Length: 292
Image 1 (cartoon, rainbow, N blue to C red):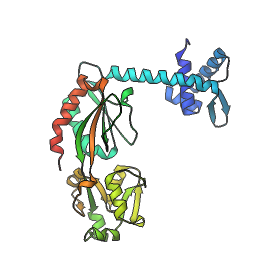
Image 2 (cartoon, helix red, strand yellow):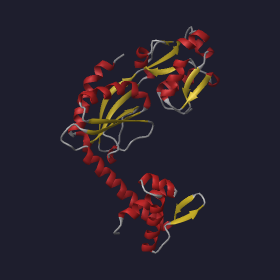
Image 3 (cartoon, one colour):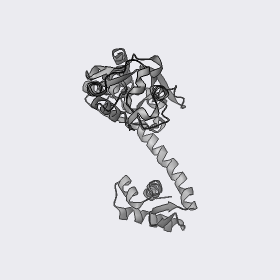
Image 4 (cartoon, rainbow, N blue to C red):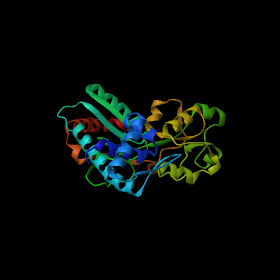
């Protein structure tokens, strides 16, 4: 096939389901997308998409072509990620990913690292998505829970993520503090909206407190912390937040079974690059100061 642009356009139409979505992803006009699809179908002599009111759906022939296109696109992404990470100097993008709840730990480290390496542009990507290190989507991932087992990754222990169960001054002024663990049933709580969340502290709280005591739920860890500080209810925050926000009071002593291990994960192809090794050394040097 002598025109990769047309195949790439078809791939994005299949992914997004609409011409406008593909145009936005590719940074081209929607007319260009339509022209590429028409030219590709004419060259192949088959219909690659069924057009309908809600967008485009790949035909059987389209699915065959798009499997090849996806594999090729993934290989290009992998190559680009590796090339970006292989520079001899400490410069360019440093892409780090983690759950949002790890931000209070990582953000100060990333800020200090960038200050010492001004030619580095930090990209800190948070969320539940597992970024594909093998395709160069991130240089370093900080992951929580059980030991990551993906092939070709270098996994190193980072820290135990300590959690604290806290109430803010605003909450205490309205409801007081629990007298003990049994009294938690008489209070209100902020929690994640995922009823099947796997965090050890979340599971513990669901076992201790009745469902009707969760008065404020959200899917975002930062919003959980904001709600706790605002007085919406008692809830868990990372231990570092207790020092950072003097208006928070721990309601019961911390427990070991609330914490989860954090892991530093890098792909073997980028692990030994100058930039990644520089950041890993900096990160490890800061671990001792993270203890609460």
